[in-house]
Amino acid sequence: MSKLLSLSKWSGFILAFQLALCPSSFANDINTAEQLYEKKNFSKAFKIATALNAKTPKNDEVLGLIGKIHFRLNRYEKAKEYLQLAADIEPDVWGDLNATYKALTAFIYGDDETVKKTVATIDPGWVKTELTVLINPNGMKSRKSKKGRYQIYTDAGIQRTKGDAYASMIMDKIHDAYSKVFPFKMNPKVISRVYIFSTTAKFNQFNADLGSDMSHAAGYYSPQTKVLVINADPKGSNVNPYGFSRDAVDTMFHEGFHQFIDMFASNIPKWFDEGIAEYFGPSQFISKKKLRVGVVLKNDNNFVTRYQRIRESVRANDPLPPLSLNDLIKPGNKNFGSGSSRSSVSYAQSWSFIHFLLHSKSMGKKGKKLIKKYFTMLKNGQTVEEAHKATFGKLKLRKIEKAWRSYVLNL
Image (cartoon, rainbow, N blue to C red; front, top):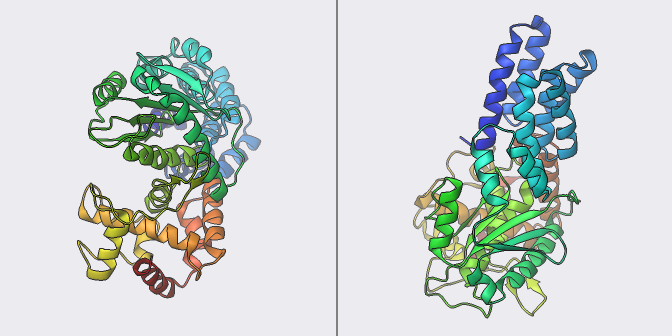
């Protein structure tokens, strides 16, 4: 269960207690809105909650729910406004939850002083623990990227090779690349935090301080705090002049996409999220300042590439045949796989389908438009089902699947 979900479950207990005191029609409506919120149907939940607010102004449970919806849609100023109104009406009910969201918002805005003051007022828990570590990570220094989008934290080992300046530069460059596919205006107050470690020991200790074990990962994105954490330990691999291996940079670009896209929407299906992250992962600099995206990594001495995996899956059903495109992208796909051969094929298939949409002659400009429209609907709070129905659900997928298979075999 995610930590953000645990926050909503706590507020759910508040709601259940209060419903007993409400007239039946109001109780039914607020209960419906809350259930829609839990199912990530934010647009419908918001519509019901705002209608209730018009009929029953200054009701703390309605105001609190509207605030939570705004937060999940990354509308932090509105979230802060409505949660504060709820806390003003019922401080015993909403006070600590309001302070928790306030601390998270301040952290996302890069306002560490407000984070310090706010976490001091909330009960012990993951927010207090993690934000305390993240605003002052042991043995790390920070710098803001040139374009001001990222706060980059690095240890002495990274700084020794000027890796902090390099990381700042490449994150700004990949952000530009993300923005070409997703040209949406980002909240100018938001700053993305990146933590980079020169050794596995330091990476593991940092995660232990956060209360987690990520020793299996080369890096990760945390949707709870919206931070990117990278283990840049080369582990014997060749490194560039700044001390970064190819794998470390790939991880930054892949996980960095999850961080970028989550600033707009948090209800993204796995095939779409991972497919585009894989698309950006192997991006390469072809000069000091020019980045090439959509790179097809055909082979690597250390691992089976996504290209190799999907070609063998399509050509020889090895290790498994790919899912039909309909099954891969349908809402609620439960056959993506996790830590298995199916997962490996699904990642490769998702990457190749995104590459097909963006680059194939058969799709032309239509592929990029589909991606943009699909994501815009998710960004606006509509469900995966609604977005799918209006975009990919309209396609003749059997015909497109034939073209995609041919594209894979001729990349």
